[in-house]
Amino acid sequence: MPLLDHFHAPLLDDPPWPSLYTMWAAGVVRWLNRTLPAGEFRAFANVRLGAQVEADVAEFRRLPTNGHHATGPAGGGGVATVPSAPPAVAHFALSTPDDIEVQIAESRHHMTVAGVIEFVSPANKKEHDERRAFVAKCAAYLHRGIGLVVVDVVTSRLANLHNDLMRAVGGPETTQMPDTPTYVVGYGPVHRDGRTEADVWCYPAPVGAPIPAVPLVLRRGPVVMLDLEATYLNAVADSGL
Image (cartoon, rainbow, N blue to C red; front, side):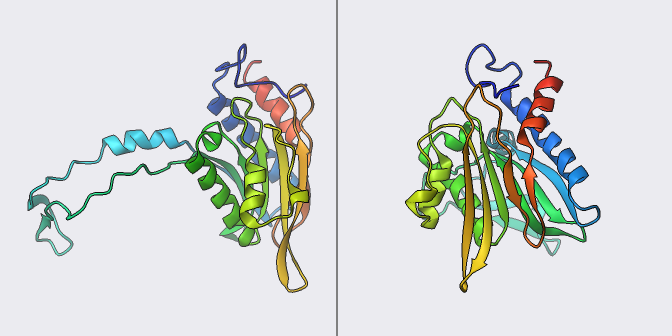
């Protein structure tokens, strides 16, 4: 089955894209844990949508503008004093980008990340701040020597985050793609001649064609050809399409 357009009619919200992405990420986790060397690496999903922060913000209590005693105890068991209004207030929006990713960690050291697969959401491509936040996260992984794969099948927004990432890390123009909105890219950090570089594999992923396999380079581990097509087909089938 070729890649479908899940961000325009007739498939828009059938199923909602977060549902499909969650199932796809889960399928990738299952595939990796069956494919990677047993006992050496373990994959797990990490899905956080920025919109969910709104519910958390609603739970924050509004601080009073005039200093007074709060009802809760302080660290030493006394009464905490809420400070009066700050001398200056800055009004600005904090970006809460979507995180839809699969992380692969060393089994014996679960906090040691060896590779990451990022699924791009529409929100990641929406505004300058969201795009910059996504690029900064990916650049941080590469600087730490962590292998990275970016999967972007979002057709409703045209930004190419791979090109933004290459410009941010000073990659040569030969690593950039035509401004195609859907693609998959693998990044393999490597040390050469005393400096850290990254091998880059770019593949367009147009609607109507199979999703290409892409190299996933694990730090201190093997290179795996990530089967995005099979895991996508399973997610589509499990969604009832």
